[in-house]
Amino acid sequence: MFFVRTASERDLAKVSALLGETWHATYDVLYGVDKVTELTEKWHSLPALKARLARKNAEFVVADSGKDIGGMGYAAMSETRTKTAVLHQLYVLPKFQRQGIGREMFAELETCFPDAEIMQLEVEPQNRQAIDFYQAHGFVKTGETASCGDAQSGIPAIVMEKPLNR
Image (cartoon, rainbow, N blue to C red; front, side):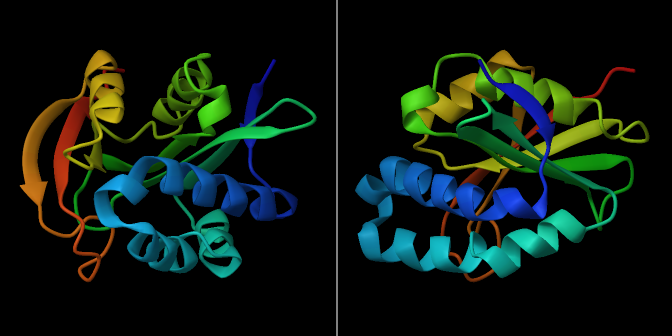
């Protein structure tokens, strides 16, 4: 049984490992081991995770069983769009997927931004499992980008949004 809680600095090594494992399981077939390793080392390093943890107007959660960190989620208010929260990450270890962990973390993150009217995210176009998950939670495609995450990633993404009804 997992419960969702706010992440702390002591969780970050496990979160980094979780992100490495989930990224390789999901994206190696699409981008190759080397590209996934490069992005993981950049985006999921301890310094990168510490910066997210310290960011204001953001929420960083983990799914914790007391023994394992089975998932993580991170969202923050947009720095460029008003009243918009951006879901940057929502990942569950492959061995714990399809147990409701992603749903529970998403439900928590969705309530953390009372001033937001929209939640936005980017998702890899070939990641059908993630797209299906987000559509089931009310997201619709609103656009596309050629570089998900940062301008140099070279990873295409679908942009999806969901109204946050208060």
